[in-house]
Amino acid sequence: MTQETTTIQKTSKPLKKHILASVIAIFFGLIWFVSGANGFNFGAMIMAAGAVWFLFTRFRIWWHHE
Image 1 (cartoon, one colour):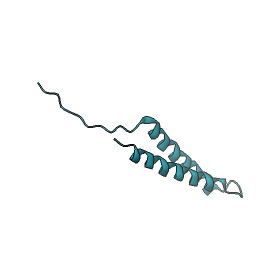
Image 2 (cartoon, one colour; image 1 turned 90 degrees about the vertical axis):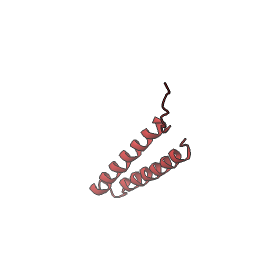
Image 3 (cartoon, helix red, strand yellow; image 1 turned 180 degrees about the vertical axis):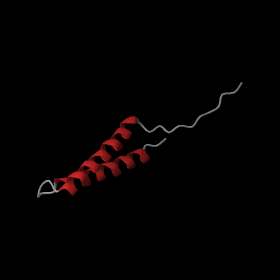
Image 4 (cartoon, one colour; image 1 turned 30 degrees about the vertical axis):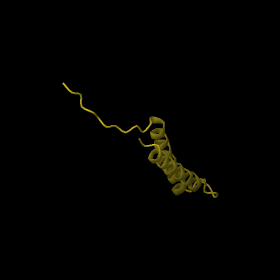
């Protein structure tokens, strides 16, 4: 009896949590931006930070992919 080999992706759970958190930041930044809650437009800054966070995390996942 031989055992079959299974290929898995070893992307760590913390990086997946970072992806989720960055998407949430983008979403709430967009909501804040559209609502126009203040003149400084803090929502745009949150949205941009979430997008940078998302892209950086995707790069880390790609870089450490085994």
